[in-house]
Image: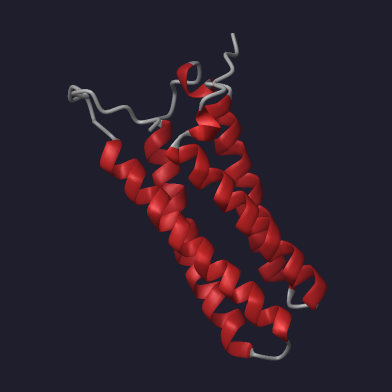
Length: 140
């Protein structure tokens, strides 16, 4: 049964996911208007969709029913891989300096990279690996 976790968007993890989606959406719009290579636009759209799927996973508490994967670790791994791709793409887009949209999109990617690193750091700090939690909740 799907249980709606209405408090998740107000948590730190929820806020980081929302920030990632907003920044990816803004980067996609910027790259779409700027007419840059399709790879940048594709990366922004993929980042938005994957973050939306993780947001819905935690919002609907599906991680409790789908126990075949350790979702916080998968989320942290996704954040770290995304940060690497966004760093490379953000630097490439900002260095091109052909039109202003490329620079702005590159800056959005670099900010998004920092948010991904913060998200991964927060997740990895709160993963317990079969240890008692001691009052710390992973949804803070």
